[in-house]
Structure formats: C-alpha cells, structure tokens
Length: 100
Image (cartoon, rainbow, N blue to C red; front, side, top):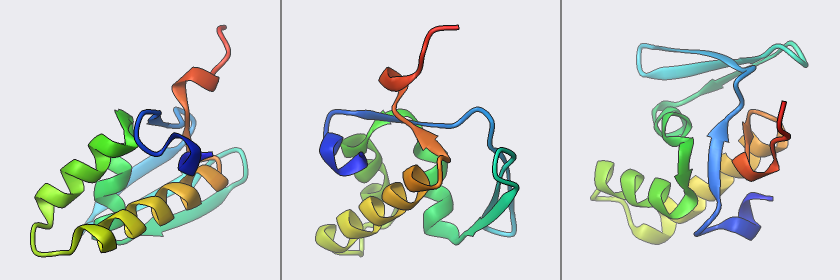
C-alpha cells in the first residue's frame, strides 16, 4: 500500500494505462476495467511524477510546483491521489512486478 512505503518506496504508472493531458487535465483509461478517470491539474502533476520516484520525491516536486500551499496540505493531497491511483490499479510498486 502507498502509505506503507510513504518515503522510500517507488511508484510507477501501470504500463497498461492509456492516458493523455488535454487543457490541463489528465484523462486515464484502465483497459483492464474499461474505466475512465479525469484528474485535475494537481492530480495530473502527481500522475506524471509516478515514474519510479519515491513518494518523498513526488511530494518534493509537487511542493516546488506549488510553493504557496502548506506542506501538510500537499502531503494529504499527494497521499490521497496515490491511494486512489493505487486502489484503482493505475500505479504499481516496481518491486512488486513479476519478471516476464
């Protein structure tokens, strides 16, 4: 779970997910479930940072992008988005992937 690897565990976008950024929002499609998700600007930034970075690195990058927002609020937002993305199977922990 994302919360358990809050600082050191890396998160990666699931390679099966199809996504695009249009007008500041990111739309995701999970072909395994045929579900669509639309993320706002902040969610899109978090999504794009799920490229093998740790949660701590993602939080640092989001804080740099939104310097006027309190750190505690950013932490909550980042953890909420990561929990949702993980729960929907849109991101994964690279260490949990099986070798082909």
